[in-house]
Length: 361
Length: 245
Image (tube, one colour):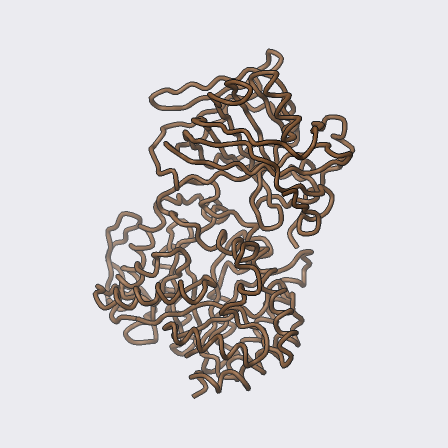
């Protein structure tokens, strides 16, 4: 099992000139330590307009900084929003290649389509067509990275024959992933030979079922890239403390704060009826997890909060469910002081990683 | 922490509905026809929102016109303007003002669920390319809106958000959660178009409509339920919510 960090880069109010800089500086320090401890990857999302929840509209810039202060940790560019109003596909291909060169071939690419009205309407993008545009983008990107010359005539974008430069450093190209929040999206990933980058905190039984179906479907895939990425990644909270009770209490405060901020945002489904967003998705699910029947002690099922033994048990369960990678949210809106976040990472590296197939080996 | 509403309760104290009690019995409301439009609004609405609630990001309102063919007080129509918000982590529609098509319905809605309802005239008309609604009060047109180009969707594509009213009850000013149930039989969506919105007439003077979001219409079996939760309007709901039953 491999471990990573996952950044939304949330910034609490009141916003001062220094508050955003502090969040970015703290994150860079955390990534540097994670690299030293043997974490395998760091992901940064692309979000826009999501007050407090995520001040991370340019993840490739943050990840470039990460790459410059680290040696081994891979940099996960994503979720890149594959909607033309947000990002032109040529620019995605180019920025990915530059990041791959600067990082020495450490890029992974996560693709998605946004789930909030807040963002989609902000770019004047129609929620009805995001799935189709995402599909077009993910089929083009590998060809843009690997073809000497590329031309395309599509429904959402077109270009005449050109040489897209530079080329990615990795050969044939970086691993590609799909952000999975709504049930069923993991099958879209499987059908295209793409990794499942889970972004929900679902319970073991549900995740196990979805992973099994993903594994079955990807055997039959028509890969959009030069190779099949059949890995399953999931996201989790992490706060590790010698005192299990302290770890649980502090970690839950962080998790609750994250859910609270997420719940303030406006999911597409809240107000725009569309077949393109048929399920509740991440935000309502977080609301349910924060306040529904699952919010009792059982809500902790699978969350990596508490002492090293509890966290090790949870991760072994995830491993048994078929998860290959776990990416951790290690703070939200600076709820936990930076020194404690770093201590949590160190303890995790010392006590938990050796107990699993951590990437340190 | 997200920003909160900034309503000064004193500014509307004299206008608040007076409820009889919190032991309101439910009304079954079959075959209701619901027309709902959502519109983003310019900043400035926070002064209308109780301090217990967070404004939505982005801020927006919904216009809900419902035709109830059957109810314990006979057929009536109800138009509401709701400022959309969050009660903690839950989406809620804070009812700024309402118009009911009969005086009896308006009085009952005020006294049972705290709707800030007054009598007026409501029309709903269905055409091949639109569903239009208008609201008049005291002879003046205060709302004209339409769903344009209806397109059939699944009922499961629609989401109705629970309402919250502000009223006097048991000697205190309280937020009342009105969490209706819906069984949808038919649903359609379309573009939202508001041709007239007299904000002052809806106690919503600072609100300026900006971008239309969506419009939907449905036929639903619904209700006005027993009251389950009330909230202190002055403190965050995570601390100020009281379960009634």
